[in-house]
Length: 565
Image 1 (cartoon, helix red, strand yellow):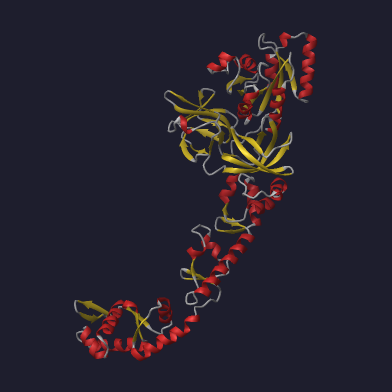
Image 2: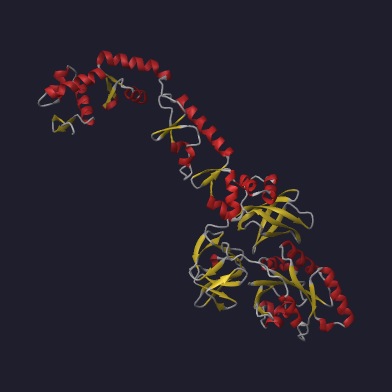
């Protein structure tokens, strides 16, 4: 099982010297680090254990100005190697680093009391006892990077630490802690693989940029591998990207998983009074945020987006580390609801799903949030409504039904001649819309939706309809200014609309139709004389017969169409 161990401890207590003595690799690679003699950035090295296993070591800076960098290195580690100088004992950064480890949920490790060669036996025993009190239950080993004393014992102690399970069967997630370029490889990123696997050719999503990238090659501690597993320190070649496209804190994730969010709902682990303005350390990113709190629950409202998952540990800092939190929802609604967060922590799968699901959401989207294991998710989904592949709450259906009924009632009041609305006017063009219509207690007639039993009526247009029909009875043809009224009356077989906004009576239409077989040829003049109407009325009627498929125009004459079949 691949494991990563991270150093911790005060500046000048010998973390980097100890890593060099254990691994043979100097993790201070920057010229400034070598010139000043202090660690500034994160360093990495492989550590061989006596049983043949290999640990990945992340060496962190110990200066108080670089706590942010220390946290970036500590996130994702499985074990700690806390370093305490035998001469000085625990110092401020020893305590803060230890607090950070606790807040990140890193429970297992070893304490190395360094520079054991620089103190007498009595002083060393006091230093060891102090270290045991500092981290109760943790094995303490006296070492000297200078003489090599205790290094074998330290390796053995690291080998006795419990194995921390990493989930290679979960979706891939890796936070970037270094970005650089190499000749022939292009842009390379490194990080600890939190979950899943990475192999050459994989398509991953760079977040929060949302860009799909292809992996060219993968290395673990400078050695090419077919694929990297969760828990390993990984270098990934991304030649399609420029170095400026990436930065520490970005994440490579399997597409379709891990929402990008500006909010996190968390349960706090408090060390001190937590102010409203904090810096949130999540993954390898540090983001300013505002904290809205109710008891042990809080919502972190971030100034820039991050990738997180349920169960992740975050650290909150101001000038110093003030608190930590465990993510309960990486993509919560804007309104902070402590009761809902409590359900996420303690609820059954059914209760959790009810708290998550309101408006339609697909099962795939729910699974991507990672709030429940697949079996729990399947069990919880029985608690909500479904249509197709989407799930939603009874309350959402009720509110949508009320809104649709209200809008249809308003439509019927405003347009009694046509009380229906197109589905597209009522619901968005979403996959869930067509099946959800069946739950809204409405009627679908063709492309439109109506209230149950709704029927078109004249309403206030009744007088205008009577006047129009009276004029048609007298004159046979009349101008129709109200097109909607004309369409309504024609649907009920009370008139026939013809061109230029006119209508004719049913009697005139049928009388003209009956004359057609007797005319040879059918011209406007012959039809006019036979019907006893004006030229304009005759022309409009013949054009309507053309449209109805009764006649066919050929130049200035018309012929009857033959009846089909």
